[in-house]
Image (cartoon, rainbow, N blue to C red; front, side):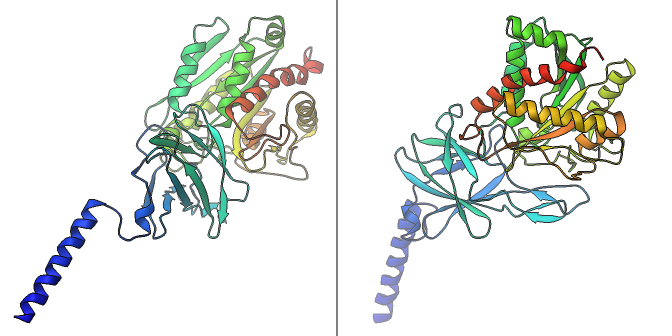
Length: 415
């Protein structure tokens, strides 16, 4: 009899416990019940692949997923873009992890004491948010919900839809020509946009978004393009001296998927430029390479090339392969000087015997004689403005570059 009473009491207690748990799904103890998180959505355009869980103290642990390089130990996870759902006015603590990257065979991490994030209630207006560096290459972000959902991103996103909107806006302009030169691995179109007369005295080539996490170059190009398309005397003077070609988004597949570094077949689009591109594994590079060779054959070799990237330093990388570098280094020195005089740029250029074999800057210089460089944009701080990196500030830089290019070719205009 006593046995039956004990068993019945235990059964009732177990049922009550199950009812309590089912009333608050996903919450297993008193501490984790304090977390107001409803859901993290990562299914939209450019959202980063991830998984998440609530730990025992009510923090939301967000684990980013790596993309991997083909036939290499290299891996990368440094892009985050997701939507948090929780009641308006509630507060959350997010812990970002899985940031132990491998770069050129060595361990590295995008996590530092200066690493920034951006937050938005509508995915359009973004505000900077300081993060805290934790042990184990993890980053903490405290988030106050301004609505029932909030977006969190590494930098202000520039998505395929943003590019499509931009191209649609400038396509009708008489100074603009947009040409499809190939397709990505997954079949997305790759464009070259020309602003100005292709027979102008000088030709500039720009490329952005070889690495999907790096939107800065897109904002710079957009600012530059809109300045050149203003109907004023200055823009006409610019385009009498040079025209600009740009490939606005090289790694469209990676951008769409929210990846960090590689294309969908594991190729780094800023590597292997010292050899012929593989049209199967790397059609994005093959398309640009083929276009460049056609331009050279037609007597329109690019005079200057910039490949845009983001990092935590913001420098211009000037490579030094084993060729005659006199004219190249002189132009790059003049370029750096003009950047300091006419833009907010202060970070400087790489000196010494800097090399990055296989990068597009070094490859185009060695193979085609094109004066090319890699221009990093600091993802944490713009020193020259003492401000956060933002779409507004990067577009301003693009506008300022129009004058830089004008003066860069000033002494060469009759060559």
